[in-house]
Image (cartoon, rainbow, N blue to C red; front, side, top):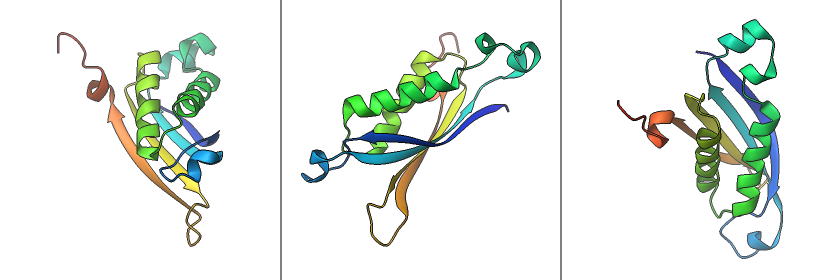
Length: 126
């Protein structure tokens, strides 16, 4: 299966459950593996035949920043919803979100979710 891969997308946002976290901006690091058919784009060499990586990054950052979520699990779900809604050609997404330097003994902590289109947007007639 073909995939678009985005690694280390930095999103500065309010995130966290504790009062002190709600008062500061913290970085989140996102990794996305987006499965979609890239055959048409590989033949045409035209942006219109693929998913726009810049738009994917912009949407991902904006939904997290607008929501200022408490949990990175919720942040991931917001990104999944937005990307599946915006890009009908996406078949599945694996998203990892890491919160760097929040636990002194760890470089980062994080989560990974993997969802398929049918998990979010069941196709009619199936």
